[in-house]
Image 1 (spheres, rainbow, N blue to C red):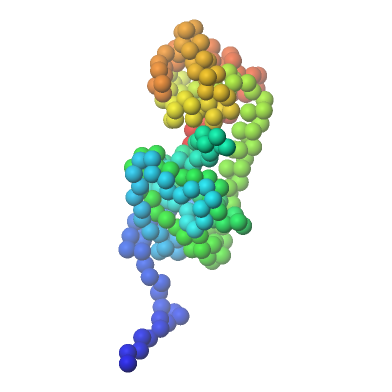
Image 2: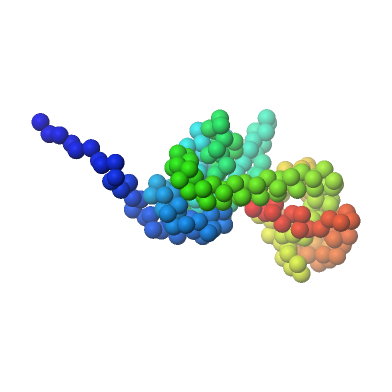
Length: 253
């Protein structure tokens, strides 16, 4: 008979083969910057890699929130669907971002949104329990995540305030100006016009009509997702007093 010796309580935990690489990625994540190496190491040792093709679903709304994602390459979109099955893209995360971290702390333990790869994407999965344990062992990690979630909540409050105090033309003008940046003239919409209309809380037909009107007036020039500003001042004059394009600076994520 063969007896297997159980591991010692002091034995080191199994290491992720790419733990050093994951630690580097975690250290560069804006939400985790400044964390001590031990906290990053505790997360990295549990991370597992996944590759996803463009338009592949990473998880669905209502799925068990068993892991969050660290994006190494590509882009991940968070979506929701209405009763008619129309999708609405709520947020987009590029390389270095931590996706669905908030879902790891929801009491019902389910993802509140669907995640989809916008392009070919490589992510690292960090298990829910590993994140909980690391937060308990490293208060600095818990504070970093709390700060990131607080900033996200503040952005959402600003969005709601802007949506309730502006009309369709003002929202689109502010969004386009924010995309162009100070003094910029080139605008590439990060999503389709239909998705952008949903994002701004307007009908797709209204957004299309506004773009056509602005182009006929000579203020902008382009088609589909690629546009050039010919008269940024005209768009700025559409904005209500006291509100500028910086209100939309966080809507492009």
